[in-house]
Image (cartoon, rainbow, N blue to C red; front, side):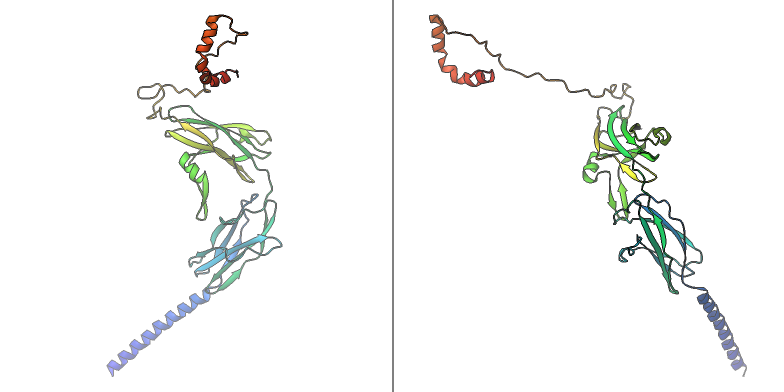
Length: 329
């Protein structure tokens, strides 16, 4: 009888613990729900791009989401190319940002109204966010021109270029340079993965945005880079304003002379001679193997002269070409 009572007590205790666990699990399930979406203000918005900002509360469950957008009056972008992601289970809102356009799409249109929304889904349901609207800017794009790069030391180069702000202040100005092999293979940048890979080094313009101003006339800018190994390079001037990025067209080549090694100052022991920028090539005068004979009018009148003419008759064919070069027939 005693053993039976003990077994009954154990069974009751197990059932009690099980009931508590089931109750707790039901409470957690009741607490979970469909994700919540909260929108922020898109920023920055520029001529051809915009960054969308929003927050998602997963409500305790793993949550997937996607961002859709399109021009107002048109449907959203195809759903087979969504901007999507996954959030782990959690009880706090997660702030997110997505930049438009994505790397495989063309740029947005300047001065155009777009609509967008976020759709989030977890095991408890799907939440379709409300439709949101933003308008891209349509401001002026700066104009950059690469001028020249001059070696000014054993491993130092000074860059020169011009920039026309076109009526809006710059937010960035720099010179980018890459070695010749990289330039011929990929240029200064190329699409890679979900973004853009940019190559080489950059040095900021010495002139500040305030010094460059916001006029509509070209302004000369400079920069200096050191610790450059000998070889051939290409550079360009680039930058941006609040509306758009811009770069100079193509690339300008320059060379770092191998005569300056070790990074020592020119003229110092172990360094190279003082650097002299190359001047214009010397003019090479035309070379003439023999001077043209002077022309003599009239016929030879002496027997001696007549004899010489007969003696030299066999050479006329050989002299014909030279005679034409001297303006004779």
